[in-house]
Every structure is written in structure tokens, then in C-alpha cells.
Length: 159
Ligand SMILES: NC(=O)c1ccc[n+]([C@@H]2O[C@H](COP(=O)([O-])OP(=O)(O)OC[C@H]3O[C@@H](n4cnc5c(N)ncnc54)[C@H](OP(=O)(O)O)[C@@H]3O)[C@@H](O)[C@H]2O)c1
Image 1 (cartoon, rainbow, N blue to C red):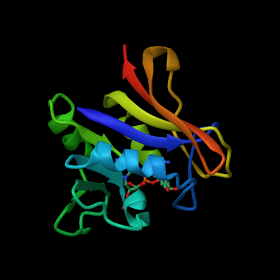
Image 2 (image 1 turned 45 degrees about the vertical axis):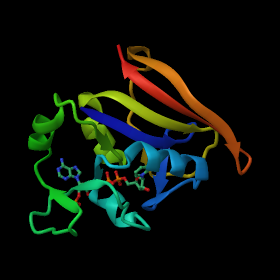
Image 3 (image 1 turned 90 degrees about the vertical axis):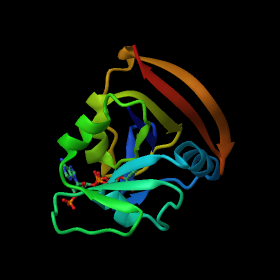
């Protein structure tokens, strides 16, 4: 099964110029503990923007470039349709880690999302895709203030 994990602002902002918009320690800790030991998939642009390469997770990088090769713990995925067929009905959790293109592609196949909503707005060029909130049951997992910003970590489960 696929689970989206993301952090977004009040206007669904995700990133600007291939960078994240916020660096909230609590959110980074939450991302690490949620994804540790799991398979995670992200787009090539997000992967290339990472400051570190996320040890302890098996990384899949979506790219259309058949010649791309990543390190030992990061596998290029050129056929997302095949990847979807392999994992969409499996018990194994595969975390979808963005960015915008990849969230949009996987949203129809996700029954669960874990989204950190940051109560802030920033200039952005990457946005989370629109979705119908009424089709999801929402539960708050955590909330807090950091650097003067209020955030909520919400779990969405499809009805
Ligand atoms: N706030 C958050 O939670 C969060 C999380 C992640 C990322 N972000 C932000 O999001 C932004 C990046 O998002 P983005 O949409 O520009 O890029 P992206 O989704 O990270 O990567 C896009 C790339 O994925 C590959 N791809 C897309 N569709 C594919 C398909 N159907 N089959 C195979 N490969 C495919 C292509 O790689 P090739 O060009 O190599 O073919 C494409 O250029 C950055 O600003 C980043 O910081 C935010």
C-alpha cells in the first residue's frame, strides 16, 4: 500500500526552486521515525535536492531517464505503472515522499496520507495536488509550535 507523506502550507505550498519551504525539527523527526526501515519513493528532482541520502530506508527514485543509476540503496524507477501494480495491493507500506509531480501521480492509488500542515504561506512553485477533503477521514496525530509557526500532523484515511 502507498502512503503519502508531505508537509505543506496554507495554500498547499510544497517547495520553491527545488527546496523545501520549512525546516521544522519536529517534522523532520516525524518524517524520520515514520519512514525508517521502509521503502520510500520520490521524484528525481526531490532526490537530487536532498542534503543527505536518508540512511535506513530503501529509496526508489522516479525518473524517465533509462540510464540513471543511483547508489546501492537508491534504485531508479522508470516504469511507475509497474511499480504501482507491484505495491498498491500489498500489505507492505511504501511511503510516497514527493514532490508535486509524484504526489499527483500517486494520489489516486493512496488510501492514506500523513500531512504536516504548516500554518504559513510562502512563495512556491510546487504545490500539493487538489483533492476532495470530504472523501477522507481526518485524524490529528500531533501539533505544536516551532520557530513561531503552528503545525498539525494530520492523518487522512480514505472512506
Ligand atoms: N513539502 C514536502 O513535503 C515536499 C516533499 C518533496 C518535495 N518537495 C518539493 O517539491 C519540489 C519538487 O517537486 P517537482 O514536482 O518539481 O519534482 P519531483 O516530483 O520531485 O520530480 C519530478 C521528476 O520525477 C520524474 N517523474 C515524474 N513523473 C514520472 C513518471 N510518470 N515516470 C517516471 N519518472 C517520472 C521525472 O524525472 P526525470 O526528469 O529524471 O525524468 C521528473 O522530472 C521541490 O521544491 C521539493 O523541495 C516538497
